[in-house]
Length: 267
Image (cartoon, rainbow, N blue to C red; front, top):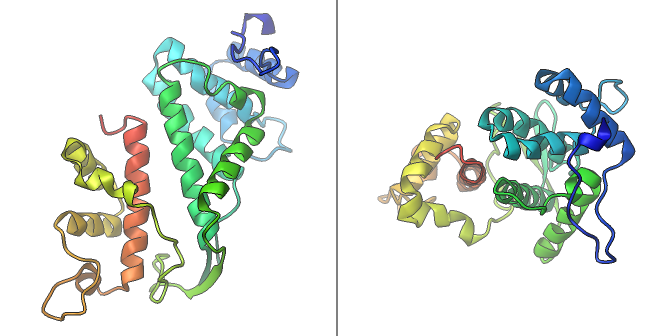
């Protein structure tokens, strides 16, 4: 049965072809016989000790296979499961308790860089090619490679953890969190200034959480995050929150919109 599974086509520098692990080939063959709904049922299981656990390499195979059957429905069903495996392969960027939140700014930035890069790779892979073959060979090692590249990109930042009071129980970053979420690259806001993105960005904003949506709409209206002049309205002043909370909400919103653009959710 495994012989009917399309082989990977990418080649190592020494000429050897990429090859899936036997256990992955066996999982693909077994699940192919049982049907797509079984892939989804077992794909939500993340505990490796569970007998129904499906390896991330197997999920990547079925995600990439949607290129051949041209099924957006299957892709959209599988994609969140694969993203979940990506996040599980990354370090935690924050830890929450009942009243406090600890955020590692460097790790939060690293997660964002890796996730954005992964989304871009998946988008390119949808058009064909063997660029993500290695994710069917060893998913965790492929993610480790992305982590290393992200680390190199961010290595000038100091890694630190800030302990913070919860913001009125909302789970949002509270006041005095100036650097807790880290700074984002200027090019991440290109989508806000480029008129070619405007219509799709507005559709994306409509899908955000209410507190993120209001920040983005004010940003598009060129209202500053903060102002030392009491006669000049600012987002933080209008919302009654710290400027750092505004920056955190905008940063998370932009990452979410970028992901929706990359996956074609916004047309």
